[in-house]
Length: 191
Image (cartoon, rainbow, N blue to C red; front, side, top):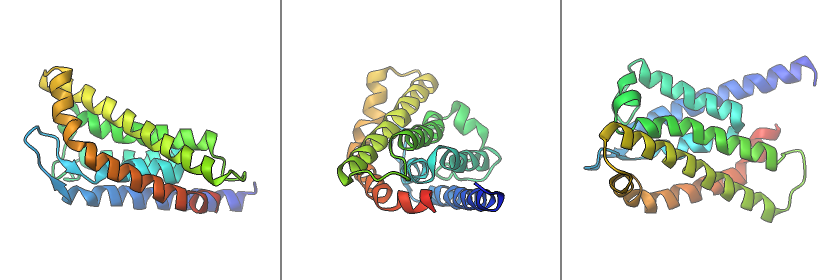
């Protein structure tokens, strides 16, 4: 790959990562607080979508930028800000899970769905579903672990507070991520 083409791809990746960081951050203002301390948000969907669409490097970077913005004081964590939200808040594990879920989905798709090869439509959609489910599993594992660590509640209480109320929304958001990834990924990654 010549230098101009490589520089163009890097510039495109940086711009897309910055746009996704801004998109994830702006979604902070669309949240529904719940009594358990974990709100219903769109940020998780967008964070995981960044990994699925942009790949492991740029997608993870976009979530990292979002996390840094909140850590330095911008109220992008559902209206909250500061490193203490990540370290000692009930949603801190979920915030870290955004980045690790984006990384997992991006890596999964990079290795199993090469944009330079012709894959059957069925394989493409199955891999997108698998990547989305993997990303959600990583997100919820991190979130549950963080919630249990911070609140001192057991895993049963954590599942009741952090998983069960979110299942319908998770299904909708995961479906949207699969559709968007299946439709747009090759256009974004290939060009």
